[in-house]
Amino acid sequence: MHSASFLDRIAARASHITTAIEATGKSLTILDKASAPQRFQFNDRGGAFLEWGARQATIWADLDQPLHHIFHALLHLHRYWVAGVPQFWDQKRGCEGMLYEAERNFEHLVVIPVEITYFPEAFGYWVFYAEKKLFEFERDKRSRGNLRTKLFQLYLLAQAAFPCSQVADSITAAVRGRGLMDEFTELAGIIFKNYHYKAFVLESLCLYGFGDVPTSVGVRWMERQPDEEGEQVYWASLKDYQTLRELPSLPLSLAHVDGSRIETTSVGRSALGPA
Image 1: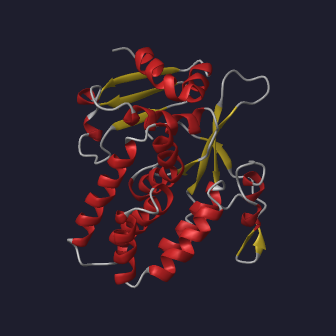
Image 2: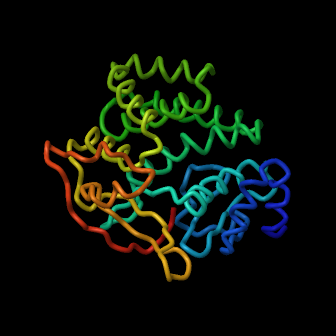
Protein backbone atom coordinates (compact mmCIF):
# COMPACT_ATOMS: atom_id res chain seq x y z
CA MET A 1 0.00 0.00 0.00
CA HIS A 2 1.35 3.43 -0.94
CA SER A 3 1.88 6.31 1.48
CA ALA A 4 -1.05 8.19 -0.05
CA SER A 5 -3.39 5.33 0.82
CA PHE A 6 -2.43 5.45 4.49
CA LEU A 7 -2.76 9.23 4.55
CA ASP A 8 -6.25 8.97 3.01
CA ARG A 9 -7.33 6.46 5.65
CA ILE A 10 -5.98 8.59 8.48
CA ALA A 11 -7.55 11.72 6.97
CA ALA A 12 -10.95 10.18 7.62
CA ARG A 13 -10.34 10.95 11.31
CA ALA A 14 -7.71 13.68 11.29
CA SER A 15 -7.60 15.44 7.93
CA HIS A 16 -6.14 18.61 9.47
CA ILE A 17 -2.94 16.71 10.24
CA THR A 18 -2.51 14.97 6.90
CA THR A 19 -3.54 18.03 4.88
CA ALA A 20 -1.05 20.27 6.66
CA ILE A 21 1.81 17.80 6.11
CA GLU A 22 0.96 17.33 2.44
CA ALA A 23 0.73 21.12 2.00
CA THR A 24 4.42 21.47 2.87
CA GLY A 25 5.23 19.89 -0.48
CA LYS A 26 7.87 17.70 1.11
CA SER A 27 8.42 14.02 0.48
CA LEU A 28 6.92 11.51 2.93
CA THR A 29 7.32 7.76 2.50
CA ILE A 30 5.69 5.03 4.60
CA LEU A 31 7.48 1.67 4.51
CA ASP A 32 7.19 -1.73 6.16
CA LYS A 33 9.08 -1.76 9.45
CA ALA A 34 10.79 -4.99 8.41
CA SER A 35 12.87 -2.89 6.02
CA ALA A 36 13.94 -0.35 8.66
CA PRO A 37 17.69 0.32 9.02
CA GLN A 38 19.65 -1.74 11.50
CA ARG A 39 19.93 1.18 13.94
CA PHE A 40 16.20 0.82 14.66
CA GLN A 41 16.19 -2.93 15.20
CA PHE A 42 16.84 -2.87 18.94
CA ASN A 43 14.46 0.00 19.63
CA ASP A 44 11.52 -0.65 21.96
CA ARG A 45 9.21 1.99 20.52
CA GLY A 46 6.81 -0.55 19.14
CA GLY A 47 4.55 0.56 16.32
CA ALA A 48 6.51 2.96 14.10
CA PHE A 49 9.85 4.66 13.57
CA LEU A 50 10.23 8.18 12.18
CA GLU A 51 13.29 9.63 10.48
CA TRP A 52 12.95 13.16 9.17
CA GLY A 53 14.95 15.86 7.44
CA ALA A 54 14.31 19.34 6.09
CA ARG A 55 12.93 18.01 2.78
CA GLN A 56 11.89 14.41 3.32
CA ALA A 57 10.77 11.94 5.96
CA THR A 58 10.28 8.21 6.25
CA ILE A 59 7.95 6.31 8.56
CA TRP A 60 8.59 2.60 9.08
CA ALA A 61 5.55 0.81 10.50
CA ASP A 62 3.84 -2.55 10.81
CA LEU A 63 1.61 -1.97 7.81
CA ASP A 64 -0.96 -4.56 8.88
CA GLN A 65 -1.26 -3.13 12.40
CA PRO A 66 -3.64 -0.39 13.66
CA LEU A 67 -3.36 3.00 11.97
CA HIS A 68 -2.73 4.84 15.21
CA HIS A 69 0.95 3.83 15.02
CA ILE A 70 1.37 5.73 11.76
CA PHE A 71 -0.75 8.59 13.05
CA HIS A 72 1.54 8.81 16.08
CA ALA A 73 4.56 9.28 13.81
CA LEU A 74 2.65 11.82 11.71
CA LEU A 75 1.94 13.86 14.84
CA HIS A 76 5.66 14.02 15.62
CA LEU A 77 6.37 15.06 12.03
CA HIS A 78 3.59 17.65 12.06
CA ARG A 79 5.12 19.32 15.10
CA TYR A 80 8.54 19.58 13.47
CA TRP A 81 7.53 20.35 9.87
CA VAL A 82 4.33 22.34 10.28
CA ALA A 83 4.41 23.84 13.77
CA GLY A 84 8.18 24.46 13.71
CA VAL A 85 8.59 23.07 17.21
CA PRO A 86 12.23 23.19 18.37
CA GLN A 87 14.05 19.90 18.93
CA PHE A 88 16.56 19.19 21.68
CA TRP A 89 19.96 19.10 20.02
CA ASP A 90 23.59 18.67 21.04
CA GLN A 91 26.09 20.18 18.59
CA LYS A 92 28.59 17.44 19.44
CA ARG A 93 26.32 14.38 19.40
CA GLY A 94 23.10 15.41 17.70
CA CYS A 95 19.96 13.99 19.28
CA GLU A 96 21.22 10.70 20.65
CA GLY A 97 21.30 8.74 23.88
CA MET A 98 19.76 10.43 26.90
CA LEU A 99 19.00 13.61 24.94
CA TYR A 100 17.05 11.58 22.39
CA GLU A 101 15.11 9.90 25.17
CA ALA A 102 14.37 13.29 26.75
CA GLU A 103 13.18 14.68 23.39
CA ARG A 104 11.03 11.67 22.56
CA ASN A 105 9.46 11.43 26.00
CA PHE A 106 8.79 15.15 26.18
CA GLU A 107 7.09 15.13 22.77
CA HIS A 108 4.97 12.19 23.91
CA LEU A 109 3.37 14.42 26.53
CA VAL A 110 1.77 16.29 23.63
CA VAL A 111 1.55 13.59 20.95
CA ILE A 112 0.05 10.64 22.83
CA PRO A 113 -3.02 12.43 24.26
CA VAL A 114 -3.82 13.68 20.74
CA GLU A 115 -3.26 10.19 19.33
CA ILE A 116 -5.72 8.73 21.86
CA THR A 117 -8.27 11.45 21.09
CA TYR A 118 -8.44 10.56 17.39
CA PHE A 119 -7.71 6.84 17.75
CA PRO A 120 -9.19 5.69 21.10
CA GLU A 121 -7.83 2.20 20.49
CA ALA A 122 -4.37 3.65 21.18
CA PHE A 123 -5.32 4.02 24.85
CA GLY A 124 -4.97 0.28 25.50
CA TYR A 125 -1.66 0.15 23.62
CA TRP A 126 -0.07 2.89 25.73
CA VAL A 127 -1.47 1.59 29.00
CA PHE A 128 0.03 -1.83 28.24
CA TYR A 129 3.32 -0.12 27.30
CA ALA A 130 3.37 1.69 30.67
CA GLU A 131 2.54 -1.52 32.56
CA LYS A 132 5.40 -3.32 30.80
CA LYS A 133 7.87 -0.53 31.58
CA LEU A 134 6.79 -0.42 35.23
CA PHE A 135 7.24 -4.18 35.53
CA GLU A 136 10.74 -3.90 34.05
CA PHE A 137 11.56 -1.10 36.45
CA GLU A 138 10.28 -2.98 39.49
CA ARG A 139 12.55 -5.92 38.69
CA ASP A 140 15.51 -3.62 39.35
CA LYS A 141 15.54 -2.34 42.93
CA ARG A 142 17.97 0.51 42.30
CA SER A 143 16.68 4.09 42.21
CA ARG A 144 19.61 6.12 40.97
CA GLY A 145 20.88 7.46 37.67
CA ASN A 146 19.25 6.33 34.44
CA LEU A 147 16.64 4.18 36.20
CA ARG A 148 15.38 7.17 38.15
CA THR A 149 15.18 9.13 34.90
CA LYS A 150 13.19 6.35 33.25
CA LEU A 151 10.76 6.21 36.16
CA PHE A 152 10.29 9.97 35.95
CA GLN A 153 9.57 9.75 32.22
CA LEU A 154 7.02 7.01 32.91
CA TYR A 155 5.43 9.12 35.63
CA LEU A 156 5.11 12.07 33.23
CA LEU A 157 3.52 9.90 30.53
CA ALA A 158 0.94 8.52 32.94
CA GLN A 159 0.03 11.98 34.21
CA ALA A 160 -0.35 13.34 30.68
CA ALA A 161 -2.04 10.47 28.85
CA PHE A 162 -4.00 8.37 31.38
CA PRO A 163 -3.92 10.06 34.81
CA CYS A 164 -7.03 8.30 36.15
CA SER A 165 -5.95 4.77 35.25
CA GLN A 166 -4.88 1.92 37.49
CA VAL A 167 -1.41 1.90 35.94
CA ALA A 168 -1.01 5.61 36.78
CA ASP A 169 -1.83 4.76 40.41
CA SER A 170 0.72 1.94 40.34
CA ILE A 171 3.40 4.23 38.91
CA THR A 172 2.66 6.85 41.56
CA ALA A 173 2.93 4.18 44.25
CA ALA A 174 6.32 3.12 42.86
CA VAL A 175 7.51 6.72 42.91
CA ARG A 176 6.31 7.22 46.46
CA GLY A 177 7.89 3.93 47.53
CA ARG A 178 11.26 5.14 46.26
CA GLY A 179 10.94 8.39 48.19
CA LEU A 180 10.91 10.40 44.94
CA MET A 181 7.44 11.89 45.09
CA ASP A 182 8.43 15.39 46.18
CA GLU A 183 11.13 15.90 43.56
CA PHE A 184 9.05 14.30 40.79
CA THR A 185 6.06 16.47 41.64
CA GLU A 186 8.18 19.63 41.61
CA LEU A 187 9.90 18.86 38.30
CA ALA A 188 6.69 17.62 36.66
CA GLY A 189 5.01 20.87 37.68
CA ILE A 190 7.75 22.87 35.94
CA ILE A 191 7.43 20.81 32.77
CA PHE A 192 3.64 20.84 32.53
CA LYS A 193 3.47 24.58 33.17
CA ASN A 194 6.11 25.30 30.53
CA TYR A 195 5.73 22.56 27.93
CA HIS A 196 5.26 25.20 25.20
CA TYR A 197 8.77 26.44 26.04
CA LYS A 198 11.07 23.58 25.19
CA ALA A 199 14.32 25.43 25.84
CA PHE A 200 13.24 26.14 29.39
CA VAL A 201 12.16 22.53 29.87
CA LEU A 202 15.52 21.28 28.59
CA GLU A 203 17.36 23.70 30.83
CA SER A 204 15.39 22.42 33.82
CA LEU A 205 16.11 18.79 32.91
CA CYS A 206 19.84 19.51 32.55
CA LEU A 207 19.98 21.25 35.91
CA TYR A 208 18.04 18.38 37.49
CA GLY A 209 20.14 15.63 35.93
CA PHE A 210 23.60 17.19 35.80
CA GLY A 211 23.48 20.33 37.94
CA ASP A 212 24.68 22.32 34.92
CA VAL A 213 23.83 23.14 31.30
CA PRO A 214 26.48 21.96 28.79
CA THR A 215 27.41 24.67 26.28
CA SER A 216 26.90 22.27 23.35
CA VAL A 217 23.27 21.60 24.30
CA GLY A 218 20.44 23.65 22.89
CA VAL A 219 17.56 23.50 20.42
CA ARG A 220 17.32 23.44 16.65
CA TRP A 221 14.36 24.56 14.59
CA MET A 222 13.21 25.09 11.01
CA GLU A 223 12.56 28.59 9.77
CA ARG A 224 11.90 30.24 6.41
CA GLN A 225 13.98 33.35 5.82
CA PRO A 226 13.12 36.16 3.35
CA ASP A 227 14.47 35.59 -0.16
CA GLU A 228 15.38 31.96 0.59
CA GLU A 229 13.84 28.84 -0.90
CA GLY A 230 12.42 26.45 1.66
CA GLU A 231 13.24 26.32 5.35
CA GLN A 232 16.66 26.60 6.89
CA VAL A 233 17.65 24.77 10.04
CA TYR A 234 19.11 26.78 12.90
CA TRP A 235 20.59 25.92 16.27
CA ALA A 236 20.99 27.97 19.43
CA SER A 237 22.71 27.11 22.68
CA LEU A 238 20.57 27.20 25.80
CA LYS A 239 22.97 29.91 26.94
CA ASP A 240 22.10 32.10 23.96
CA TYR A 241 19.23 34.04 25.46
CA GLN A 242 19.30 36.79 22.86
CA THR A 243 18.36 34.30 20.14
CA LEU A 244 16.00 32.14 22.18
CA ARG A 245 13.92 35.14 23.22
CA GLU A 246 13.12 35.78 19.54
CA LEU A 247 11.51 32.34 19.18
CA PRO A 248 7.83 32.70 20.09
CA SER A 249 7.71 29.24 21.65
CA LEU A 250 10.56 29.89 24.09
CA PRO A 251 10.36 31.62 27.49
CA LEU A 252 11.61 34.88 28.89
CA SER A 253 12.54 32.95 32.02
CA LEU A 254 15.87 32.13 30.35
CA ALA A 255 16.80 35.80 30.75
CA HIS A 256 19.01 35.11 33.73
CA VAL A 257 21.44 32.34 34.49
CA ASP A 258 23.37 32.57 37.74
CA GLY A 259 22.07 36.10 38.13
CA SER A 260 23.55 37.47 34.90
CA ARG A 261 21.82 38.38 31.66
CA ILE A 262 22.86 36.39 28.60
CA GLU A 263 23.55 38.45 25.49
CA THR A 264 25.38 36.12 23.09
CA THR A 265 24.88 35.37 19.41
CA SER A 266 26.05 31.76 19.12
CA VAL A 267 23.63 30.67 16.43
CA GLY A 268 24.64 28.24 13.73
CA ARG A 269 22.99 26.14 11.08
CA SER A 270 22.65 22.45 11.81
CA ALA A 271 22.23 19.50 9.48
CA LEU A 272 19.10 17.48 10.12
CA GLY A 273 19.38 13.80 10.94
CA PRO A 274 17.40 11.04 12.61
CA ALA A 275 14.64 11.97 15.03
